[in-house]
Image (cartoon, rainbow, N blue to C red; front, side, top):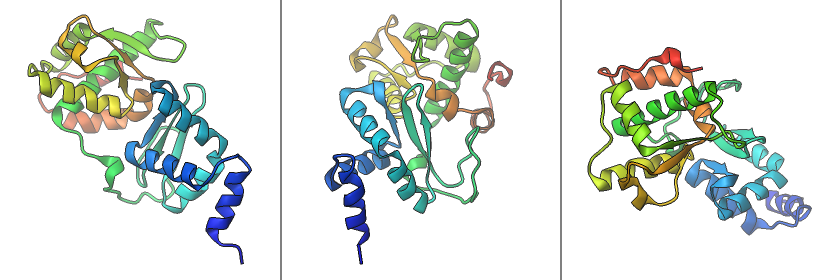
Length: 222
């Protein structure tokens, strides 16, 4: 009888991969919950590896009740935990899930995500997106939008501000070059199209409920 490990090794061998490649890819997925090819050379390698064995990864994660959302145009893929609702993806189980893929956001993270989604939608309507579907904004614009939409300032403390933007970069919602630049108003950040999939209208309503004093207009979102 062929063991599951032997079967997996045989399938990986067809793509010139081995079990170490498999383990590294799955660990990356479970650690980050998302792969975005343009993020770095390391991320590009993991993404390219995933594309070669997508069916194998999908089959394995399905056993855990985890689905994949793969955007081939913008070259990102993320894990959808059981019970999560995503536009265009129906959930067959509707089970609760409280694992690492659903880390609870704090209020600063919620506020910034709402602002970035509103600014992304605005830029899309104005045709201000690049070929990767990204929108580039200055930190000053983000700060002003936060004040206008939510009556909230970005954290003034350097450490707190860096932690806030680092968290959203880990979620692959934004990208920026250096953390030190976050202290400058003319620093530029890129909002990725993944924010549309991450922050749908239902999610916006849930987030808004956690910011009762917010002045966020959900009609501005698609």
